[in-house]
Amino acid sequence: MEHIDYDIDLSTEELELKTAAHKFAEEVLRPAGKKIDRMTPDEATAPDSPLFDVLKQATELGFNRMGAPEEMGGTAVTPRAATLVNEELAWGSMGLAGAIGLSSTPANIAMALGNEEIVEEFARPFFENTGGSIIGCWAVTEPGHGSDTLGVMQPEMVVETKGQLIARKDGDEYILNGQKSAWVSNGPIATHAMLNVHLDPGSKLDHGGICLMPLSLPGVSRGKPLDKHGVRAMTQGEIFFDDVRIPKRYMLLDQTAFAPYMNIHLSMFNAGVGTLVTGLARAAYEEAYNYAKNRIQGGKPIIEHQSVRARLFRMFTLLQTCRTLSRGVSIYNGTAMKRGVPVRLEHSIASKVYCTNSALEIATLSVQLHGGNGMTKEYPCEMFLRDATAMTVADGENAYLTQLAASLL
Ligand SMILES: Cc1cc2nc3c(=O)[nH]c(=O)nc-3n(C[C@H](O)[C@H](O)[C@H](O)COP(=O)(O)OP(=O)(O)OC[C@H]3O[C@@H](n4cnc5c(N)ncnc54)[C@H](O)[C@@H]3O)c2cc1C
Image (cartoon, rainbow, N blue to C red; front, side, top):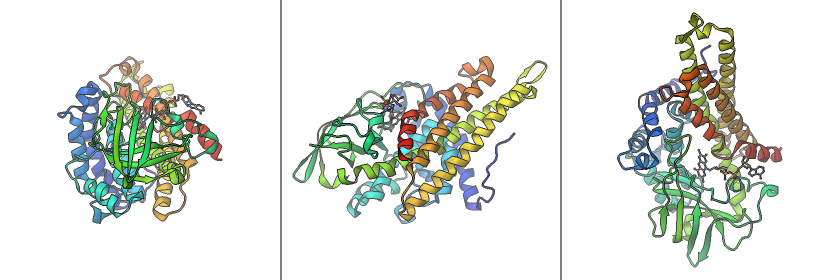
């Protein structure tokens, strides 16, 4: 029961890229991800953390520059090639694949929404940088607004309240005051942010804007890195804003385009999460399959017991379905974006919710097939289970996203 890639027609170029990503995942991400998982959050974000070497190597290999054109320093790969790479990276480490992907968020948004000046300021330096020293994040959630921040494109889910990061216009500048939640991935290490703000004096949560900014501006400070259960290799933490002044041009869009843009952004991010957790699910399945071939109980390898084979078959079916769904959705929405036709949020949510729930079931079965060993840190399956649990909440908790998608049907 070896899982296979149903895309039997991958081009030589795609196969080479997939092989390069797998090599990096196996040789660099898997060991570094395991090491960072066991570090304290302070150690994980300290200057000598392996995290920075991972980001440097990923940048050298171009794995966070896949969406940018070649003249900008990007690798301009197709949506299908990007899904192949992302699945491989998350097979190595869910947390590190997330950190690598998020590092390019401000640069990608500058390309998508910015004028020439913004592109030169936020995109080109990132794509031309090979040292991994420019690190991005997307700061959207707030202590009092988690799910609420994600459903703003659907009028019936918009909440009558102000956000906790307020941007007030002052001449040619905006002044930012407030904070983002402890869950901002890459928050403790990011140099730049894509930031969702509440535009003063709006009174509802869809009165938002999206801006880009360097996090070195006066008035920006950070909280302690978060100590959490899963995807510990992707570090997280609060960002505070105290009278932070940004030029008006950094505000890429205001409340008129905010909700429609959040629809596009969540579509792309949820599709991406579906692909990443497919890689995680594959890692958990392979671990269980190999263990079952070697563990002797009842006088034979456990894989020869009917109930073990049935569980492996269940995992295999879920995994193959995840790959098909997540790849289809990522290719559809990635191509739609390039062609300027509407992306489909409900499909991305279907992929995110199905694949994260399946990854959780696969990781749970993987732990159970390891018996007592599955509880120990000697085997990676317990980390896969923690990572899978976290991904059911990342980028929108699954039950909330299901409600949002259902309201779009
Ligand atoms: C691994 C990870 C990575 C993350 N990365 C980032 C990041 O990069 N940037 C960032 O800003 N944030 C990030 N987050 C935060 C994440 O987006 C939120 O945790 C998520 O949206 C849920 O918000 P919450 O934690 O506030 O939970 P809440 O919104 O408080 O939800 C709690 C429960 O209530 C339910 N619920 C909430 N509202 C409704 C409703 N209207 N109807 C029905 N049920 C509802 C939810 O389904 C959930 O079960 C990350 C989180 C995790 C776990």
